[in-house]
Length: 452
Image (cartoon, rainbow, N blue to C red; front, side, top):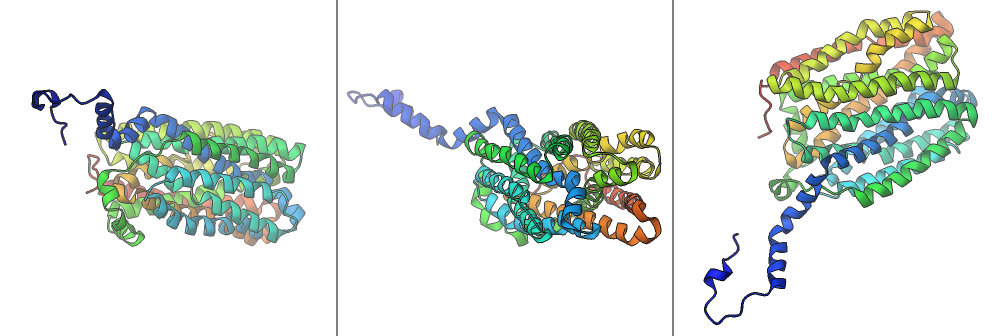
C-alpha cells in the first residue's frame, strides 16, 4: 500500500508528522523486504559457509576410508562387516531422518537446523575414537548419521532461494566443492594423523572444529526467506505431495535414478580405494592420504567447480545439455577407472586416475540444480531430501556394502587381490547411470523453465 502524501493532504493548521513517526513508518514499509535485502547482499558468503559445513560432513564421513583397515584389524571385522559399517549402518539413519527434518526446514529456521546438526555429528565423531567393539563403533557412526541427516537438504533449499535457474548450478558447484575440500582434509590429514597418533586419537581431533563451525553458522549466516506464496501454502507441500510431484515428472525420475547410480559407484569406490591402495600397492597411511588429497581433493575440487559453470554455460544455449553433459562425464570415466584398478604399475595407475578423479563427481551439482528447477519453492528442502534419500540409500548404503560383499565372494579365487576386481566390476554401473541422464536430457525443454 502506498504511503499517503502527507504534505499535500494535511489540512491547514494540523501539526506535521514528527520525523520519528516518519522513520517508524518507513521501517514498517520495508520490514518484509529487510531480511531479503540483507541476505542478497551476501549470497556468496552464505554459499561459502554452507560449503564449509559440507566439507566438515565429508571430513567426518570420508575419514573412515583412511581408517578402515586399522579399525578392521583392531575390531576383528570382515570386509562385509566394514562395508556395513560405512554403508547401511550409516545410510539408513541418515536417509530416513533427512526427510522429516527437511519438512521442518521447509517451514523455516534452516540455519538453526544446520547448526544443531553439525554440532551433533562432530560430537559423535569424537565418540567414534572411544569405541572398543564393533557394536560400539556401529552405534557411534549411527550417531554421526543422525547429525548429518539435517544438513544437506536444508543447505540446498537455502541456496535455491538465493539463486535463479540461470546461475543455480554454479552456486551448487561451490556448495558441492565443500565435499572435495572435506575429502582433501580427510585423506591428507587423516593419513598423517593415522601414522602419527593412531585412529582413535584421529577421531577425537577432527571432531572439535565442527562444533566451532556450528556456532559460526548460528551467529553469522542469515536465513533466506521463501517466496510469499510458499509461506502461504507451506501446509500443501507435504511429503506425499512432493513425492507425487516428483514421480509424475519424467525428467525428474531419470535424474533421480541416474544420480542414485552415480552415488552407488562413487561411494562404493571412494570408501574402498584407500584399502585397495594398501592391499594392491602397499602404501602407508601418509602416502595414501597425500595421493588421494591431490587427486580426489584437489583435482576433484577443480572438476566440481567447473561442473556448475559448464552446465550453466551449456544450459543457456540448450537446457537439455545440463543433463546430457552428465551422461558424457559418466561414459568418459569408464576406461580410465578400469585401467586404474587393473594395471600393476602404481605410477601408471595414478596417471590413469587423473580423469576419473577430476570429473567423477561432475554429476552432483548439475543434477541438484535440475531437481530444484523442477520443483516449486514450497517443496525445495523436501525435494532435496528425497534426492539425498535415494543418493545415500543406494549410493552410501548399498555401494560400500556391495563392494565388500563382492570382495568377500571373490576372495577364494583372487585372495588379497579380490578387492581390485570387485572395484573394477563396479565401474560398469556408470553406463547405466549415463543412460538415465541422457534420457532425462531428451525429455527436458530446450529452454530452462521454472516449475509451475
